[in-house]
Image 1 (cartoon, rainbow, N blue to C red):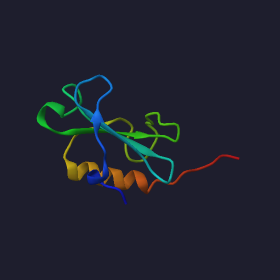
Image 2 (image 1 turned 90 degrees about the vertical axis):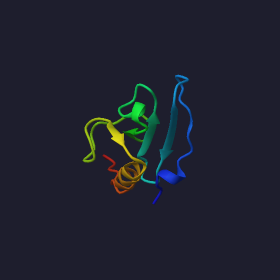
Image 3 (image 1 turned 90 degrees about the horizontal axis):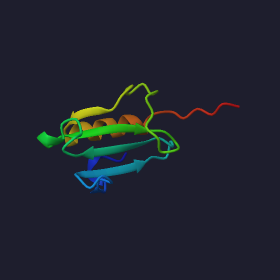
Image 4 (image 1 turned 135 degrees about the vertical axis):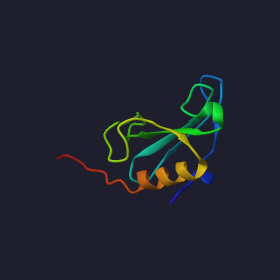
Length: 92
């Protein structure tokens, strides 16, 4: 399972702070940011959003119905592992 240590942060597209985007084998992913405007960013904490297979933020998972803020590195790892455990369903 991938954890915080495997994230590759780049400058956030808005030019302030950093962002890492990771897609997992189950087609879900995460966006992890720390900016002056993210939840907890000014305190050195991270914000995590769950991404769907198209890379868009999804609010329809058992993990959360919003972004998760004020996270430590260990908490980011915990949620990354939970996202990797999500099952992907295909409608026929």
